[in-house]
Structure formats: structure tokens, C-alpha cells
Amino acid sequence: MPATSLLTERHRRHENETSGPNAVLENLRRKQAIIDELIAGRLELFEAAARFAPAHRASAACIENAIGVRSGIADDERLCRTVIGWVHLTLSHRPEEAERISARLEQQLQSQIDQCGRVSLSHH
Image 1 (cartoon, helix red, strand yellow):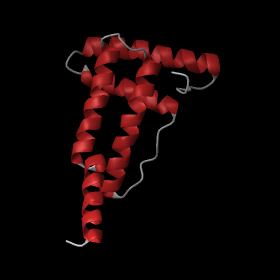
Image 2 (image 1 turned 45 degrees about the vertical axis):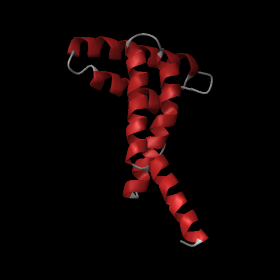
Image 3 (image 1 turned 120 degrees about the horizontal axis):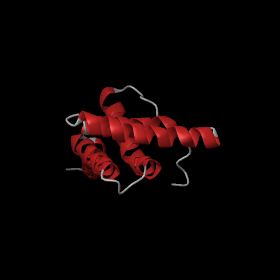
Image 4 (image 1 turned 135 degrees about the horizontal axis):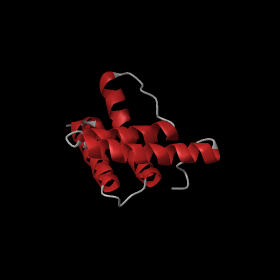
């Protein structure tokens, strides 16, 4: 096999490892682990959202590459709402707990917006 073909094959393998189905699954696992920590009370909303962001962006990039449509990266407030949505979905089999925790997180988010006028995860 010529050197160029070998380099192309290595590049393709690396790209599949970082943007293929395995990468998407790994990002889903990371995001769910963060949500589990948030539900358990070991993380606050803004810290969870800051940790969630890299996996969320990587998943979006994988999906964009697969379907060829740009989804756009969420701003910090939208990212917090995405995290709250994941919490609600994770607890969907326990609706009262889902409502209670989601309402608490929404209150934290709204409090941040009321105090600062916006949400910034850069300091979390």
C-alpha cells in the first residue's frame, strides 16, 4: 500500500473514532453521567451545564457531519434549558420528582437571568 493511501486510511479511522457512532455514544454517556450527578445533587445547574457543553457540542458536530445540516451551537441559557430537559426526560418514569427538580432548576436559571440579565457559563 502506498504511503498516501496508508495516511488516508489512518485519517479516515481517526475521523470515525472522533465523529462516528462510537463517539456519539460516548458523548451520550458523558451527558447522562452529568445529568445523573445533577439529579443526585452533586452538581449545581450551571456547573452541570458547563460540563455538559463539550459533549453536547461534540454530539452536534457528529450529527452535522452525518446528515450535513448545521444545527448551530446553543447559547448558555439554551444549554441550561437543554440540561433541564434532559433531567426531566431522565426522570419521566417519576413525574413528580421530574417536576420538582425541573422547577428548582428553572428557578435557579431564572434567578441568574434576573440578577445578571443573562446566563454565562464561563466562570463555572
